[in-house]
Amino acid sequence: MAKPGVLDSDPEIMVKKVLEMKKELKKLVKSIVEDEDTSIEAIDKAKETLCVLKDLKLRKKSQSSMSFKINKNVTFPDEFKCPLSKELMRDPVIVASGQTYDRPFIQKWLNAGNRTCPQTHQVLSHTLLTPNHLVREMIEKWSKNQGIELCNIISYINGEGAKEADQNHFLCLLEKMSSTLCDQKEAAKQLRLLTKKHPCFRVLFCDFEDAIPQLLKPICEGNSINHDLQEDVITTLLNISIHDNNKKQVAETPMVIHLLMKSLRCGTIETRANAAATLFTLSALDSNKELIGKSNALKPLIDLMEEGNTLTMKDVASAIFTLCMMHDNKARAVKDGAVRVIMTKMKNRLHVDELLAILALLSTHQKAVLEMAELGAVPCLLSIMRESSCERNKENCVAILQTICLYDRSKLREIKEEENSYRTISELAKNGTSRAKRKASGILERLHRVVNITHTA
Image (cartoon, rainbow, N blue to C red; front, side, top):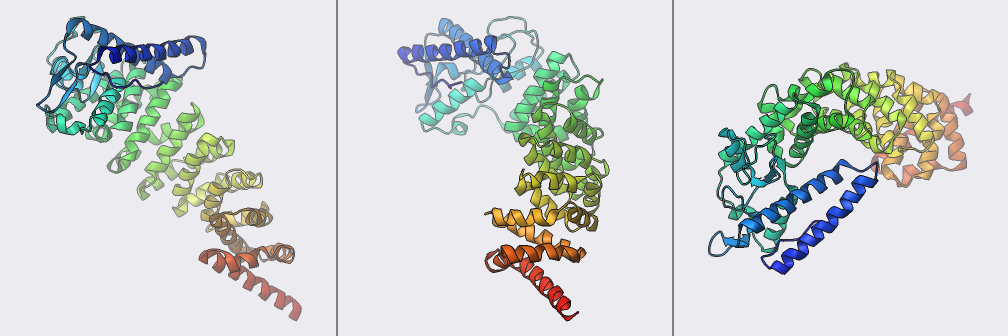
């Protein structure tokens, strides 16, 4: 949806902007009504636009002035003012009545035990606060156009107040995760968004001991899982795991690895991709690599790799590669069929870059090398070297070939035939990367020794 511009104090411009928003809303509503596959994002955009239009309508009736002064030098549209603080909103949120307030002040109002909307006096059906991204973007755009840094004109709240408001909002959302399915879905969606945009919410998850179990509770219970809820929970877990200090606690929380494995097997494509991305992020720690490996998480990752969905492949390959940096996990990957899956896909020239990197890593494991040789890796790798313009791919290919020849001298015959026809290895020994030159030269020396021995015999 096109984002509306700044609400100027000129009434004509104001009318124009409102008309633009109504046109966008009309398109969104038509899409939601007529398109069976309409996205949740489209519904959220329509909801936000309606709330903004309603808020503007109420303000137009109750206020005669379009702007007021913060100080001698700065004025801003009245629509950006919090009705409670009379200050510019820093974090606009929507309450159940549809009105918009600055989060710290409406949170303070609610914490005092009030359950009505301060403007309309309507009893609130719930106390969930929904970020008003539309108004926030308008404020940010207006500030940018005015050459003003937002942080310089917002001085009404200190760090401790913001932290307290964030914590209260965070705990309220966690409480909703144990409520009805509707509340769970709304809370999970907000937690996903907050942990994506605001690092402080990632930290909060590990500041509160039971926060992660509370987040996971809706997808732990029963056999039937709402896939939208599952996607938001798993993506929130990914966002939490990005914070370095969280990685150990997240991985060691009971049920986390199990639920990630379960999500690799079932759920939306985004759920499965984000479950793989979470395992990749957590495996940055060696202790987590071991824990994830011992939990048998490599098997569902390899199964997902075999499915070959383009949207999941990058995250899956990254997770497998990082986990296989630990020797014990290489053995597990080989046992779970990684070499067979990789060779099948590479022969069909699917995801060659990512899979070659994993294969090169596995080539330090003897069983993996022997399986590669049996599955026809030599002609496959030689053909990739001829076709590829990627120096890294050629380097990985020749490194794997050298290892295969070390364990199985019979494969040197295939390389000799390649040399007679294309001189692929010789060319790389002259023009490859320094590592590729070294590996190619090693193969040629071994080839020449075998030829000399044959002639002598």
